[in-house]
Amino acid sequence: MDYRQSTAGIKSTPMMQSTGQCEPESPLPKLLVSACLLGNPVRYDGKSKDLNHLGLQQLLEQGQAIPFCPEVAGGLPVPRPPAECVSGDGSAVIAGSARVLTRDGEDLTANFLAGAEQALKLCRDKQIRVAVLTETSPSCGSTQIYDGSFSRRPVAASGVTTALLRQHGIVVFSQHQLEQALNYLAFCRQTTSQTATRSVRENCN
Image (cartoon, rainbow, N blue to C red):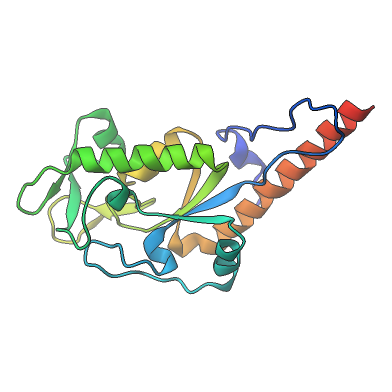
């Protein structure tokens, strides 16, 4: 797959500042991963969805994969009642035209928005440009979420956190697209390294 066309919406990583030294100072992009996919029992039912993937575990051990659960970060407990986007998808929730509700009608929209904002801040702080998030989650779904009827009927849409990250140029994959995500991360890291090297050469000439 040619990823060059996929970088148009990605904000460039800050490159070397003028320090008078001919050394690159550009951190390589990291990967945001739903915490439940890394074995953390933070899902609504108190369980995890551990992918048990060697490459992902290596990134985690190297500090290059950052686990995050937007629902827990937004103040929700574990376990918690399942929730779904009602009257729209994650983008509609951000726009204020849809809500995130439990089956009993409890409104958790503020928690989901707060978790999404914290995910975006983490991506900015940690130079994260790629994410692997849990499919069908009202926060993390990237190609599917449930339709709001609590009948576990999926629709083609994205969750609140995914929608906000994409609005700010972060590329989001599901756990079913893990190899694509890792390939894209490698592409981003290679591009960043090459750009930093060119910057060093220009500053040292």
